[in-house]
Image (tube, rainbow, N blue to C red; front, top):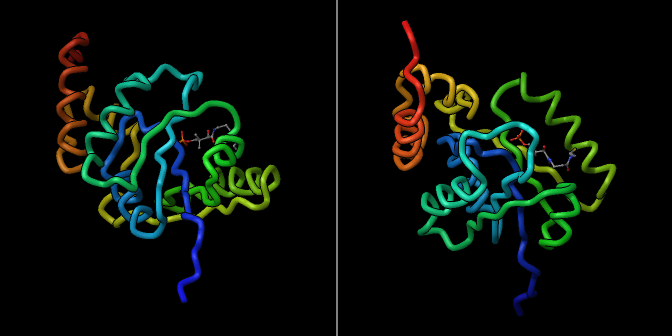
Length: 171
Ligand code: PNS
C-alpha cells in the first residue's frame, strides 16, 4: 500500500537581479529534492533594480522552461505569509561562504520565530559558483569585465542590451 503524501513545496526567495549560475545550481538541486520549488522574487524592494520584476520573471521562466516543477512568481510582504499562501513548508537559501552565515542565520531564526512550522534549508552551490553574487556580476559587467560562464546565456544577452543603453565607462 502506498501512503499518499501532500506535495512538498519549497520557496526559494530572493532579489535575482539578475539570476546567476549560482542561483540556477541551487534551483536545480532544490527541484531534485522537493516536489515543487517556487522561485519567489521580492517585489517592491526599496533599491532600484537593474531588471524590472517582469523582466526577472521572464528570464527565470525562460531558463527553467523545461522543468515543470520550477515555478516563478513575485511576492511582497512577509516571506512566511507568502509561504503559507502557497502551502510551502520549506524555505531554501543558498550558502556560499561563512560570510553569508550571519545574515542567513538571523533571517532563518526570525522566520522560525514567525512561523515555527516552516523550515529553512540551506544548500551549497557547486564550488565554482561560491564567489558569484548578482551585485558583483552587475558591477563587473557594467565595467566591461567578462562574466561568461557565471550567468545563463540569456541573462548575459539581456545584460548586453542594458549596457548598450547606458553611458560608456570612462578610462
Ligand atoms: O537575495 P536577497 O535579496 O538576500 O533576499 C532577501 C529576501 C527576499 C529573502 C528577504 O529580504 C525577505 O524575505 N524579504 C521579505 C520580507 C520578510 O519576510 N522579511 C523578514 C525576513 S526575516
